[in-house]
Length: 568
Image 1: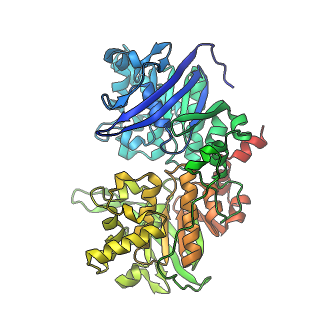
Image 2: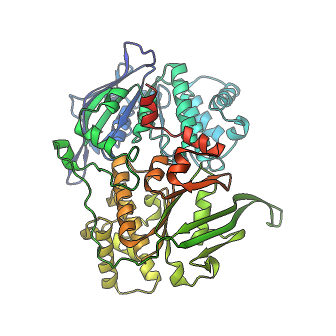
Image 3: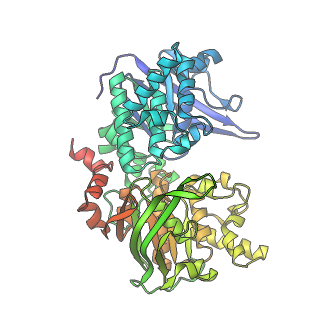
């Protein structure tokens, strides 16, 4: 554990908080207490909706005024000052100066119309009395400290010109720019691949240790917590249900909810076995799992083991430079001569770091991106020449259902949109189909008139799966379908996918950077690197005994509970 001073940087005592609706009051936090010492990294874990982010935002009073209620008995002290009693001027001094925040998605946290330099200047010059020349030197040094190879280029770039990992490094550099006493990191690595995640976590720990900065790490990844944190707090329904040294809490959990979270992880479980899921009754000591969804439509008959999709030397290129007439003069190659066969009824997973070409390859299969070279066949026919009815047998589920579901449409319209395109027009017919599909994926059919924002992340992902299933596909492309979900909801979605495959003989192309999920759900694995498949084979063979140097590097970067406790 890092050396910590006796005086806590953060001391939250008996914090309760309620959100005030027009006719309702929702209790978000119920009497939580938490402290963090200087130089200490503390984890805060729990399911979505447990109160983790609300706790973090309370440290900086970022929640909407007039919409929350906090009793007088609650206190939130940062550096011995009660944040709840600070004036606006004091809060402005604290935010970004003494307390910094690293948000989950840097693309939305960074201003897309401002260069990195302007955004870093804004933070530094607001909190430090230094010249612009000194601020510029500080920015370049900070970016270099973040292991950015070309800090000058990054400094002058717009956020969209940087990769996800680079944007997150910029966020960390900004967070450390004013030498804060506390950094709040809210799911800082959720959307990153394992190699970039390992680099980001290493940088965060290295900088926190060097500057004796306290860190509150909010995450649903228990392996990350085990690897990085000195102590951990476990939250459930607005309460702290367990706390202590990380290796004690995770290695020997006492509360049934903590045990349930660990049991929901695919790590260490038999491949393709059902995972335990956390239910509301578990807090009272009752173990519960998700029910197997009903099957209102007839199973699809498949001939398992025969090639369904064959990719022959597929190449995808994107224009990167143009002349003054707008003609393309240079290209970036995203997929470079990839060949892969997917057999009926099996799950083939593609793993690799961001930018390796995984999603570009998937997008070509549904016609979102044209092939620049090579050939793809589906059931022996050229994919480019398939009739619409056959092409509908290939469907895709995107990574983020929040952005892939139309926020203005009720669920029944979203789910049945593919049926409408296919020619079914009767409103009553479509609503009935939506109800059946909701039942199929474990949603209440009575919810079909709700809008997407009225559902949880896991429910929205079920809606996305239901939409893909509406035209009875044979091949589902799943692009990072669990990356933004907590471990319990992830377990529910994995169970759902396995149930659907067993019942209907579906074939999956599964794209993910979560190696434990890939190991659990896959029959075969293909490893992509710089647009090419460098290794392929049975899942256990590739992931447990990799032969290619890149695959070995990838596996070494995977955070793992087994690694942490075997090294202890």
